[in-house]
Picture 1 (cartoon, one colour):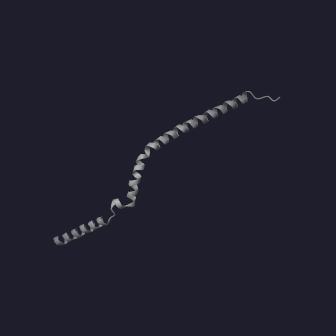
Picture 2: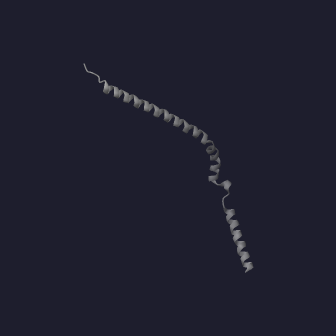
Picture 3: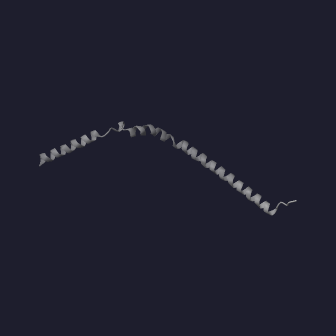
Length: 89
């Protein structure tokens, strides 16, 4: 039994080694090459993106404030028009 088991284990080990050797090398895969080129760009993105998001929030706040001011002015104008209607001559 021992020689048969040894031969089986050796064959399995050779098959595993053959399988591992037949796998593409990481350095040669296209996906890895793309990742290597893209990684520096992705690493640099958070800071400018964060600045852009902050700028957008500030701009949104200014727009909302301006719209609130416009709405208030319109309400005041309508209120004055109802309390002091223009008289026609």
